[in-house]
Length: 194
Image 1 (tube, rainbow, N blue to C red):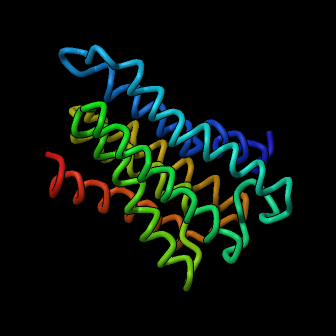
Image 2 (spheres, rainbow, N blue to C red):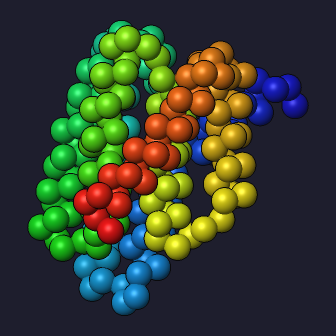
């Protein structure tokens, strides 16, 4: 198997949207006790962090607003990211109304704020959204007690390596995305939700 194919597989399997869903699943169903409305909470997480964003990207690609599904061109990233802020904000408000656990609400909140920071950075430089999107769930799962640093590090390193091999980012862009995702999420959760 050549390195580009392996990188594509890694980039797909550990896509930030799949990782976010896994993180929400773990946070919701590992709490003790599991909330009575756990399925509703998971549905809201799925709708606002997966279903609507994926549908949006597909529509933006089909209409030519973005040239590829990763919005690889820096200039094409701003509009989808702004929509992502809207979706995360609506998800956070809905989770608050459902009285979701603090870390579940916190992760959705971090998607909102980290996306704002991503837009600010993207205006000047292309940071790895994949690496950022993996770092955030690793930080929240760490706080929740899923402290498996080797697994988290391997996933983050694998995705970062894949993005560099696919020529989607430089080493500096994935390093910055990884550090930003981990530290911003960790700091915000400790400031506002823990």
